[in-house]
Amino acid sequence: MSAVRPLVEAELAQPIPAPIRAFAEHLTGLFPSARAVLFYGSILRTGDLSGVLDFYVLTERPPRGLRGVATRILWPDVSYHELEHEGVTLRAKVASMTLSRFSQAVKGRGIDTTLWTRFVQPSGLVWAVDEAAREAVVEAVRRAARTAARFATALGPEEGPSEAYWTALFQETYAAEFRVEKAGREASILAFDPEHYQRLLPACWADDGRFDGEGRPAPEMSAIERKRLKGAWRLRRNLGKSLNVARLIKAAFTFQGAARYAAWKIERHTGFKVELTPWRERHPVLAAPGILLGLWKWRRGRG
View 1 (tube, helix red, strand yellow):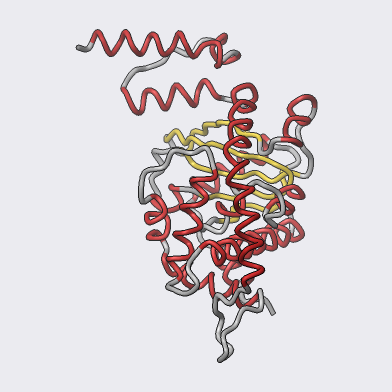
View 2: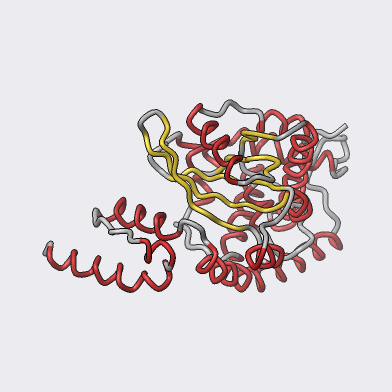
């Protein structure tokens, strides 16, 4: 019997605030083939609804047309959405991909590191179309945890507290991805729910059959396996930035709602209100230089 599964089931079933559940229901109407909606990210930790909510919508089918072709190669799709809920404007960044692709990616066999390192962190299953979809998500998140734990064991110390392994994994992940994170970012992730990571790592060791001489879960790993996993990680580190750059290029042309998202971010961080015209909505990349010039002039005018 899996030691990880009950931990994952309890995590995914955690209570989700009503505004977030309402947004998830709204997304099921925007993605007609939705099978499940996951909620994750900083607002799950802070509860601050003034920020941007993070969702993953797992679908039965990819989008049609050129977007669908691009999605099969470089997943996920990313889009920005807003919802008025009880007089409050909620905002969300939504990643979407097929449930079948999600289930394969978390096994860690490809060079991508983003999914299984993201979903070893706490998340909530806000909505599932049926029990089969719920079961598929539980199994996928369980696989994500085991993939992350295997790499954490290889990249971390031969022995030590659980946070040492997770710290090593997250530090290596940031080095492998094209992301700018503040120093110590991994510490804030672990500090949100330290018990989650303390329980999860030995459970993953148990499921992988790693025990010490007294039958307790332990980071027992042969020199051959450690060398193989470190070699696999070097490949991911060498190719990870290129993969993420390719995704950024794709997002520049396929990010639905990009102009509205950028306008909100600019106003939130600077106070400068961007005028959104239909042309800017349709052509966010072409509109960017003009918006940045307007921001520069506005700042100069303020002295």
